[in-house]
Length: 423
Image 1 (cartoon, one colour):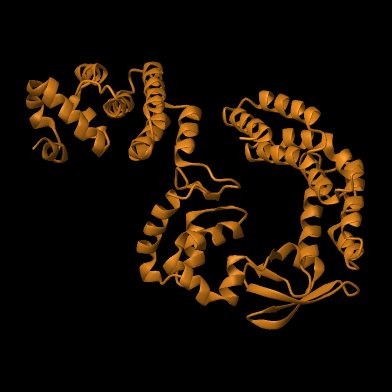
Image 2: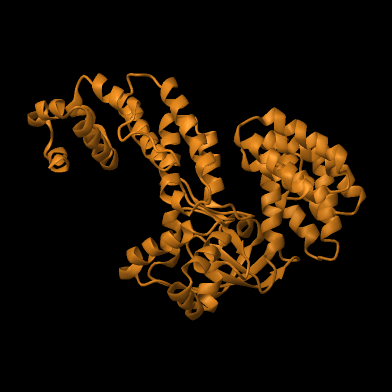
């Protein structure tokens, strides 16, 4: 690992642990150590953004903005100005710098003055983020480019008339749809030629072939089309019925998810409300689980990460140190968790028992902690019923080994599902 890669990982670890002041101090040290590596410093600033620290990212961006301008790196300079605008939306000095940056970058674009006027970037009453969004949209809507309208679907720009302040877009419903620039800036979303909707229009057969032969490559196109993060339902509405036959969707998607789990470039959602993400650099599943375990704030989160580790433990070379870390972490988390949360603590203890069984010196069949939690359970039947299916099986096995008489005494109180496990 190179020196900068090592520093980058240190900063990401600090952000993941929510040590934001430590991460900021590290960035400032690196800015002094590598003043000429502005691209590297910008990459680190993006990590602050990804961690939800927009104000801190903007503050750091302001420190290198002058150097970028002086070096003639106008695209990077504009990026730092946009970050600052997100937290200082009415700053007059920032507005003047933004206008200068746009003029430097688009000096050969004859549409620029019209676009800046329509976007009202030069108007002090207009919040900067809204003006920037309008300007960027209109700059992207060049003749021949693609765009999306919420109601009219995919369109292609036929002409952009700066004098009349309008564009003409070819939509399925109207091949010569004229739009005034203010309305176009509000209602159109520019799409690049690699966007999934554009490719569906231009090369649907190739996408269908990818669906059959390389589902991961197809999902990659979709995720890249939505800024590297997309919800499951958006993937389905994008592909089902057009690229993948609707009646085959569930089977296709189940298989695709299995393949995505093996690809270190993808970050799969931990819950339904989270998106699929495409990483800028691959991360092994092992590294991902270690990070999830270390940053977990609750016992249930550590238990979930431990379960995932157990699924791949046989694929890890020399896993003993890793297993020991998870074991120690679970023991500590169980101790800190309120004793009244019996189900959560027993779930964790049973996973802990399974972790121990994979070590070079396996623990006893039933760990003392599992036996203790089962013995202390006032309502054993209710506790067993609340457990997950896998944990219930292990708990019943532990009871059979350590307290068979107690299990027999509770038979009449146990639900049928639990009785089936006992049988």
